[in-house]
Length: 186
Image (cartoon, rainbow, N blue to C red):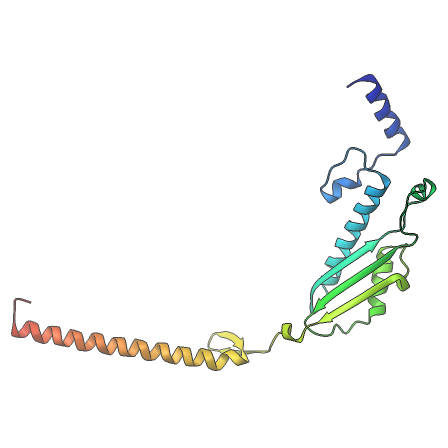
């Protein structure tokens, strides 16, 4: 390594300007900027919160978007960034959650100390078509109520087909046996 590069790297390491937070997100960067580090942190927080919300009963998917306020050193340098931290949450469920949105907002603000519950917006989408129907026993398996009659009809049709094929096979076998008795060469 060249001496100036080694010297510069030693200064960066001594001042603590570098970060290893990028290793958690799977991306690599020799010296991530404060903005890159902030973006990765927000991304990782959002993913953790999504996993938390997806463990709630009846939640199919959850998407969380976190915008953290700009670090003080960026504001001092005059770079633009959000002045306060905010979060948006979209939850898709198959029925009402039974959890008040204010409680979900407190989960976000508890995970991200710089976010006030008032700065969290929550959208809960309930799709009645996604609601799971109660299942009914159909032999050894369970099926949806509206499928019960269809499966019974299909099973009856399949049984009738097997019986007809068996009858046809029996008749054909009987005719072959009768033909062999009349003509031993067959």
